[in-house]
Length: 624
Image 1: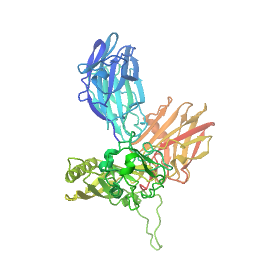
Image 2: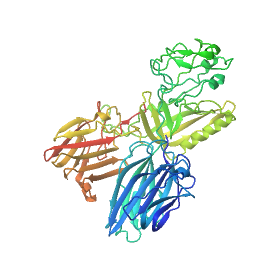
Image 3: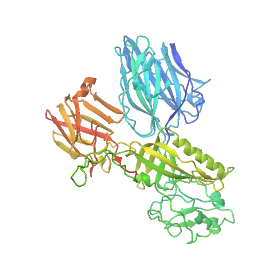
Image 4: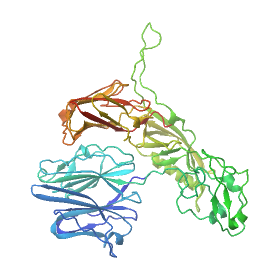
């Protein structure tokens, strides 16, 4: 997977009057980058984006427009994106691109470049935006959740009179454009997996910050998706049953068979050495085709699911290559996959000799009470779980990680050092994201911190090194890659009970949740209470939620927030209206795993129907 990264921003076009905005292109821009152009102007007509130097329609796409007025000011921001190929196609001449309109108005703007974005399709997603007029020195609040994994979220702030943005709301966000003079500022934050941003605001200091218009937008840049292993049927004629994997050919055979027109999906763990050894090099120029039509089981050991097919040769190829013998054998590929901060483990170059600690259930904290004169101990219910530890003995092999070979012009020793460097770079971060793909394709992840690395034991002659990696798992539970957003609703009159089957399969407590409460229809929801009967965990709100409004509650470890939608205002003093309870959690709300999914009961007063929606990720005690 790849998270979009900031490359550079061009020189900011400071405020002035004109009928165009000449934006300096970012230095180092490279084919495949996404360029974003932002134009602030004090009129309502969208600028005309530059056309390619050879003529024709512009390649820039307008994806966001913001408008606000305050004290008689007219404030507009227009944002465009372009997938960069070269300056000519982008309409960049002399290092800048010109956006034009009719009539001179006050304007400024900037262009910035991002790389490692999705290679095709739309790379930008508008999450949320808001605008505010006079009367506040803070940016309008915005919040949201990226639509998928591998997103970099851009928090784009605008102020009619410039100024400096400060405050706790900027914690965790990196300033990319922020010069205290221009109207536009940009902050970014990476989200390897979807997570709510929370309600974001920043304080503005500058000249007359209370009297001028302000805007805010949340934009997600989409990165390349994680590689998913699977069937090769896209490039090999479909046999009777799907075939997982690929056959590696070497020597003259590899030279004679052209690469397939469609890239092969899947992972090959090891070369099929013995099979290749039984096929001699061809003795004449090779022509013809290779097709699959029947059972391959006679020459290739069966995979996890029986693979159907035979190999048929035509033309001179059939004459040059005799059929493989029954003695041919291939090593069985390992179907599951482990990644450390994106670095694949259990492939050619990096392998784990033992992953049993990933299957260990975390221990509970605390003990029971010894009572004199009684056998045994008095059990204390509701114990919490302690931190976990993952000990991974790793083997590093000096080969290319993609095909298991030594690249031309390199050596096994040189490749070994490169593979060690890759591992050290991956685990050198403050935190390590461990991703595990089960044999059924289901993905889970957990975050830890490297506590200890035993110095590698290297055998340079063999091109192999071994080391032991110890990772502490402060949060002991594994989680799904994505939030559960289906089969997660309780809806009906007071006393309605529903089983949230979307969370079925969880084996650990789920505490990082988002809960939304509100009425269904025209009647208000009064004093809603949501409870899991089996665990006794509950949350309640003492107040009225009118039609069209919702109360939103975040229970994440780093985000305890309550707010409202549809005009429902939650002030600091209103937090006292929220009550909660339960022996086994200290969060505002949590769910314990149950067969079929947690069963929740929603009660409320005032009549009518109400709805409770719970969003979060399933949690698991182990990776398996």
